[in-house]
Length: 100
Picture 1 (cartoon, rainbow, N blue to C red):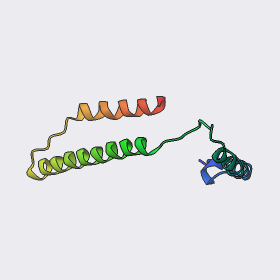
Picture 2 (tube, rainbow, N blue to C red):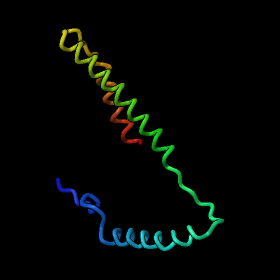
Picture 3 (cartoon, rainbow, N blue to C red):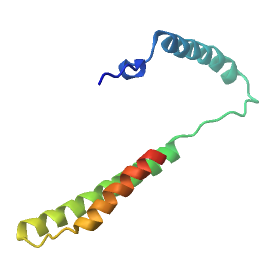
Picture 4 (cartoon, helix red, strand yellow):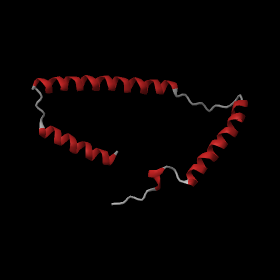
């Protein structure tokens, strides 16, 4: 099966041209926005990025703890997975991926 999708190899020439035009427009408007004291546009990412970083960090720590516990159970011979739960989880995950 062959897939012909120009998006797999990166943006097309027209898209990259649009991106460059947008960057030029942003550069041109940034000097006028900086000079205008009444400008109310504002973007603040630091708080949001900090919350995302904390969430990712705690997820990584929780996941590594779970993996360590499962490793210990497996190595001691006490790991007995439930095949029905595993298959139901795999199917639910596959079905939810199609709706997300």
